[in-house]
Image (cartoon, rainbow, N blue to C red; front, side):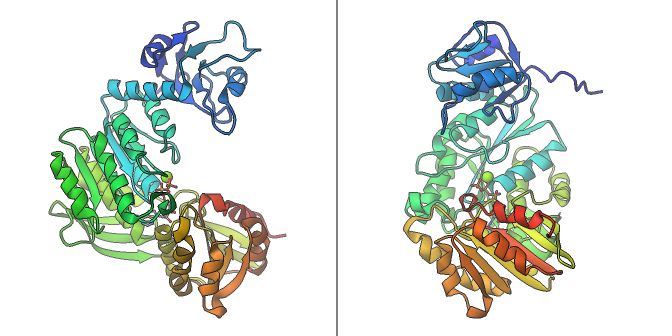
Length: 464
Ligand SMILES: Nc1ncnc2c1ncn2[C@@H]1O[C@H](COP(=O)(O)OP(=O)(O)OP(=O)(O)O)[C@@H](O)[C@H]1O
Ligand SMILES: [Mg+2]
C-alpha cells in the first residue's frame, strides 16, 4: 500500500547546503521544489528567482502557504527571524547547482528531448510509455529553459528509474549548457524547422543549435534524430565523431525507426512502423501524421533507454493530445454542438501545417480555421505566414485571422475562404462565436503570445 500522507523527502537541509554551496538557517527537509507560490505545495522548497518580479517578495507568502524552506540570495525586511532559509550567492545559480547535484546522485536513465516542435508531445509520450515499466520523472509543462531544466532536475525523485527532460532554446548556444546539466544517455531531436528563426537567422543555425544536445550526451549514448531532415547527415556525422550511436527516425527508406504506412482519421491514426528491422503496429489516439512521427521518436528513445518495443508501442494507443495541443472538445452552439480542436498553445509554420492537416481530416459540415500570429520569425514572418495560405485554403472552408502577421495569410487566401481579419484574439473571439453552427469543426491555433486561448475559452462558454 502506498502511504499518501507523507511524500518522501527529496532533499535534507544538509544536502541542499552541500549541493548549492549555501548556508541553511536551521534544519529542515523538503519534499518538492517550487518557483511559484500559486502552485506551491506544503513541504516544497520555494526558490526565489528574479523574473518580471523578484521572487524574494513572495518568500513570506510561500512560507505561510507551507513551504518547508526558501532558497534566497538576500533577505528582505519582515521575514520571521527563524525563517528556514537556504542562503546562496545567487538564486538561479543555486537552483542550477541543485539540478546538477540531483543529476549526479540519480541512478535514473535520462532522456533529453529538444526540437523545433513536438518536444512536449514526445516528452509526454515517453513519460506515458516509460511509466509502465518504472518510476518516471519528466518536465512539467514546457519547463525547458535556463530555469526550467534545473528545476526539473532538482525535482528528480530519489527512486526515479527514468527521467525525461525537455530542452528548448530561443537563441544560439542555449541547448549545450542545458544538455551538459542533464547529461542524457539518450538525446532526441524531434524536428528541425523554422521556429525562432528570427533569433537564429537560418535553418542551418537551428540545426546546429539542436545538434548541441550532443554536448551533454553521455559517452556511448544514443541520439535519436529526424532522418527526413536535410541536416541529418551532418548531425549523424557529429554523433559518429564523438562515438555516439545514432538512430534515424522518419519516412526515409534508410530510417532505423521507419514509418512504413500511416492512415489518419478524425480522432487518431494507425501506423505500421519498423524499428531496427522488426515491424510493429501503432495505434494512436491523437490525430495527425506528425503525432505518428513523434511517437516513432518516443519509441526509438524509449527502446534506447531499455524499454520493450512491443509494450511501449502498445501503450501509445492510449496517448491522447493534451490541452492546447490538439485536444478535442464538443462545444455548445445554437441548436446543437460543434467540435473544437484546441491547438492554441503553439504556432510555428510546421505546427500550423500539422494542425491544418488535422482540421482537413475532420468529417464536418464546415471546417473553420481560426489563426493567430506565429511569433519570433523575424524578417521571415510575413512570407512564412503568406505561404500557409494554400494549406489553409485546402483544409478549411472558412478562415478567421488575427494579428498583424496573419494579415499576410489572410490577404493570400482565395476570397471565398476569408471570414475576417481583426487585430487581436479578444476582438476575434465574438466574431467567430457569432457564426458557429451545429456540425462545424473549429481549429484554433497560434503562438502562445497571440493569446488564442482567449478564443478557446470564449467558445467553451455556453452560447448566450
Ligand atoms: N512532429 C511535429 N511536426 C509538426 N508539428 C508538430 C509536431 N509535433 C507537434 N507539432 C505541433 O506543434 C504544437 C506544439 O507541440 P509541442 O507542445 O509538443 O511542441 P514543443 O516543441 O514542446 O513546443 P514549445 O517550444 O512551445 O515548448 C502541436 O500542437 C502541434 O500542432
Ligand atoms: Mg514544449
